[in-house]
Image (cartoon, rainbow, N blue to C red; front, side, top):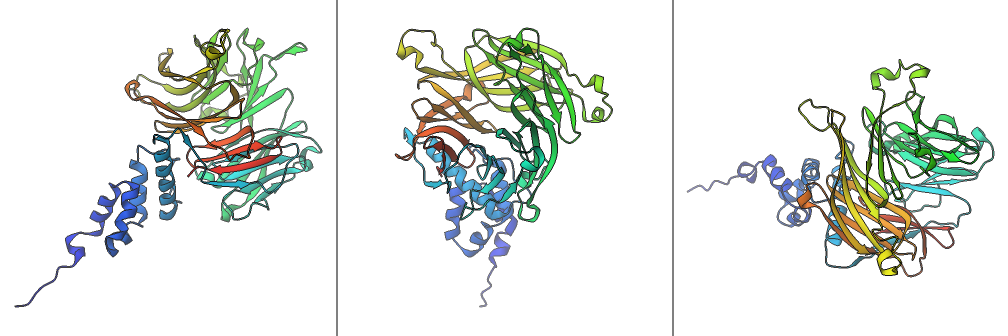
Length: 470
């Protein structure tokens, strides 16, 4: 009697294997490679990892997957995110670094930031340098731009950036900084096939004390109140159209230091928020020109209209924007939604050290309806005996998950793992972020929750250390 064999491909087609694998956890996909050659080969397919990327709701993942990302790149991101998730949800009270790298030279006067946990942007007197922190050696810069040819000699100051400016991920990044009497806006090509730097714009930096880039705009924080005179407007610059708009400061608000005023730019409006001591959270909404009207705007119309104002009574002293969304659907009752993570000292006026050393973290939700109603509510709050924050407060958030870090006067860095969304599902876990014993952190330069990478400045502010926690 003849025996017939059925090929495994007939029993289980490739697309079925891909679908089954895409339903597994990251660790289970990797373990499945030990079963047989067919499943092993299938586990390396990009379709599998792209599907897992889109459905891994418990992991903090950067935007993606992009068409340019390979299967190996997606797998690497997901494995790292899984390891970080296990660390932050464990019973341990602290997390420790897995790897440490020191920038190869001591620095003098400098400004620095880290883009997407990979590219160190370093500003010094003789120019801007970009270093790839994933390279085997960080001695030589990936890019260099000598700003002295544009502005002459001058100390560089403040720094901001915006990634994904052409929907190409990191391949095109804008960097803005001040030098001399000008603000320079540069476009960086960070892809191997598009490596380079180009000057996009030069702006005057008169009275500017800080800048921020968001959604193709450069926001210029100016000296609002002073004994020498009062400036009652700030400027925002639309980078692609090279247009400057005036942002009027409401009456009385110019008396405060607005350097920490936070801006959220939506398709049709700009939301400005500022924590004012003994007053609360001040929220102002301005109407932005639409894309179709940008070309037709005449100079007199380049003054933004203040449409809404609201004050929320709270003792928040610092806050970070977790996420913002805008709904243009006519069926929606919400036009704009902004979620905030706030830090406050509930008993800061108490004479007791135990009381004033307590810190509260709270989640806030701001809603702007199509009818013009502006509402803000606290969705979650917890108090911790943490001590005084030293103005270092940064976060990474996406799809209801947030990793935040704050730097305290004592040199301690604490991390916060948050789940936010519906009021019943909000939670906050606090852990100490461990540092090597010889690092005495003076400044938290950056913290990237997607990558689990932190950059700190120590040794009297002359050395940068890079720490990986996964």
